[in-house]
Image (cartoon, rainbow, N blue to C red):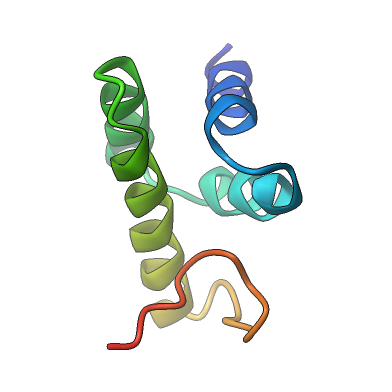
Length: 79
């Protein structure tokens, strides 16, 4: 059920060409990050939903669980 909720949120908030990446990121997210995603979505803070995905991506890259590519939609912070 939660997976359907995350996919629903991503489909509503994220541009079509970035949805697959967002879903792959959130499949590897910790529960607290999933909870944050749902919380900010319910508060209609859609920009923060995107930031949650960005943060999860950065954490996963640091942990060596994902690679950061130049053409990725998430985790491309200049710092």
